[in-house]
Image (tube, rainbow, N blue to C red; front, side, top):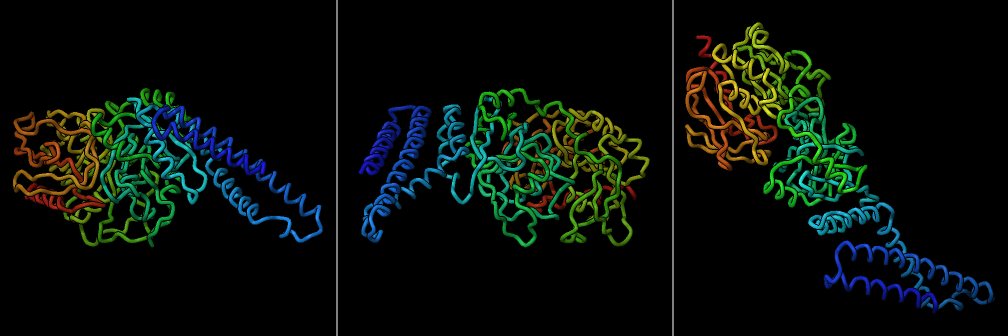
Length: 519
């Protein structure tokens, strides 16, 4: 009876603690702590009650010679079973990691508390086992509480969001994300795992990875690793279990900003200060961190792509070069500002002999290779932070046909005397509509950039410039063409792997320019 009284008393205390929270008569922080402490006290009461019941049963059984069933009633057995179940549940919910995560949620700013509670109770499930808490803090003081993903460490970078529903492996290995932490707006990431073929460079380059839920059990015949295993292998810090919709809307309203993901320092105020102190990508030369170390030839086209032969060597050259059959018609020098493998494959598909050179290669060195055309690749960061690349393109304009993509587009704009600026939250995704101003057709494009070219029409130091493509989302300049020189560029990715192939004709246009130059 004493044990029963103790148990019932504990239930009454829990109900008394819940009433203020239900009717909002107590703050979330205070109410949460009261409820946690009440559960902790009740856990101890349950254990004491279990001990009393078991001792009582043993005394009666041992002190009487009769059968044990005659000494123990069904009510006691039912009570014992129920209390054992309650004890197991409380042991899970009051594990050290759980209480630590709760305390972290209680100490978060008010704006993040409700989301932290919602995410905690949705994702802290028994089948996921013990979880390690993690925190994402933005420079403006916004805090998100979640669970650790990837390498157990701390990282800083500019927080952006990507609206693609698939292609997370290509996003992870896109050098253009150097210095950034990517938020995937699609909620379930990692469901088809990681394979050896879908990489776009030598390794993952981004600073951090943010998802709603990372699939722990991928299902695909090519999968070799789970997302979490892949991130751990390459030392990439991530976070899951946060409200990525709320984060995306916050970035849309307030703009991309520096942030910190931490698995080791869970104090919100300290982590926010670290985000405020993190260096901006404006003015930083991130290209030098991702470009190849020395020139190399690329010979693999899309038609020669084979399963099981992915990867690359440390200097950026592919580990497998199967070779395109037949003699190449044109020789192209590709400046590597952070080039993606599928761009190189598309150049080979056009019949080009491709030589990739480091971003710091001078115009004279590039011309010494006797190319028929110059390709300016994609890459990370601020185009104004790579003046050596702009100077090289200024010399090359008019000497050889030039085709630029993404950062290469921005560098060509600067070389012609145009200006660039930073977008509020950038363009990142595989579903951006762009209008071709000549045909008035709308292309669905893949994009990844935080800077854009300003203007686009008029006369520059290199002659007349025509605006060829415009974003239908925000009217940003998406394409330029020199009317007096053989040069053009686009802001988006026409190679789009994965993604739409609407803009494949742009590679054919490069062929036409070089063909005219040989006539």
